[in-house]
Amino acid sequence: MQSNTPITAAISVSQLNRRVKTLIEQGMTRLWVEGEISNLSRPTSGHIYLSLKDDSAQVSAAWFRQRQRAPAIGFKNGDRVLAFGRVSLYEARGNYQLIIEELEPAGEGVLKRRFDALKLKLANEGLFDEDRKQALPGLPTRIGVITSPSSAAVRDVLSILGRRFPAVPVVIYPAAVQGDAAPGELLSALAIAVRRNECDVLILCRGGGSIEDLWAFNDEILARAISDCALPIISAVGHEIDFTIADFVADVRAPTPSGAAEIVVPNQGDWLRQISGIATRIARVGRRALEDTAQELDWLGRRLVASSPAATLQRQRQSLREQGGRLNSAVRQQLLEQKSKLQGVSSKLMALSPALSVQQSIANLQQLRQRLATPVQNLISDAGHKIALLGRALNSVSPLATLDRGYAIVKAGDSGKVLLSTSEVKVGDDIRAHLSRGEFVATVKKVIGDD
Image 1 (tube, rainbow, N blue to C red):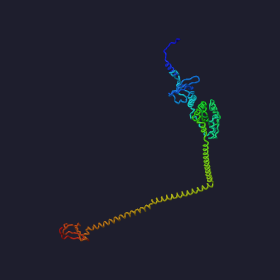
Image 2 (tube, one colour; image 1 turned 90 degrees about the vertical axis):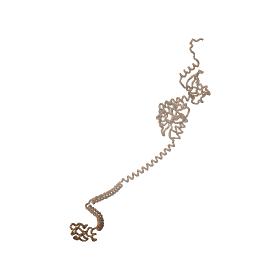
Image 3 (tube, rainbow, N blue to C red; image 1 turned 135 degrees about the horizontal axis):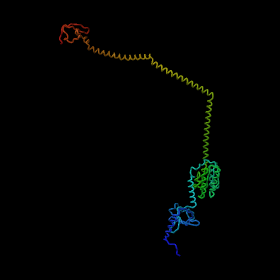
Image 4 (spheres, rainbow, N blue to C red; image 1 turned 30 degrees about the vertical axis):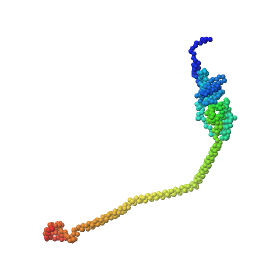
């Protein structure tokens, strides 16, 4: 039969598949697909090919080796998984397929994403901030435990609390810790504990398990109730490697229920040793206080005795004696000082007395006379000695000495001039001859020549 549709330019199958591939890849973003693995194939290239199916459909998938960030050996046919990737078309066969980028077990993968999303949300709201955390009491008067009363966790907590500090009572607030009803029961038990306000601290705990088993402690409403609780809360859920949202919003996170019991109370032995030490210090302080009080009583007794009238009169008599002695000593000292001053003034007056001055002048004059006489006598003696020497020397050349040897000095009779030559006289002149003893006058009779 001939069609009435006009024939346009035809395209090849390859072009058709290429266009379809472009439309699929551009029209769909990356997405998560949940299904069961079937037709799993692991060729030597390292790529993995499989089908994802549910009850009514299936789709081909490829997980290339370079996208496999973790070992994929554990996956097998029949496993329920979550595959994240993009939809594409295998052009050679015209089959569309899912190109896998991440592959993980279905249960844990979904729950983990929900856990991470809630954790991020509450963290951004500040519910994990340290300044919201409350400090635990040093020694609680009563401890509340929110958990299943038949669980092994509550037995561990009670056992350790009984060993560490049995004097602290424990109140159990029963609640389911697993299953759909668990979040509601945990919230109800927490509300009861807050309303009764009979405990100083609460422990929220359960034993270990899978992420599904612990999921009740990742409830958002429960997390907000824990954050708003007026009582400090210790979260002890699962094992040390397990973390729940309750751990982050609680005031303290314990790695296990047993760890919470270790944290919430001190060691009784340590406290008994501390109490013993405190008692010893109190006793020591008491003894010192008694000794100080006894010493103070003794001192007060001595003060009382010292304050009696007889003691007062005795102190006054003693004081008068001491003051009299000091007064006598002061008077004697004053008299000695005045006497010393009078002696000093008398000495000064004596030093200024005219008689003393005259006596001193006389003594000085005598000393000066003695000092003057000695040099004068020495001078006179020296002068006499020198004169004697000069006299002897003079006598040796004296005319008188010459006269004593028979010579005479002849002078002119009228003028007394010493005659030295016969030319100075003439016959008839008077002459005067001076002899050693006496003189005479003569008249010249004859003059003999100069020769």
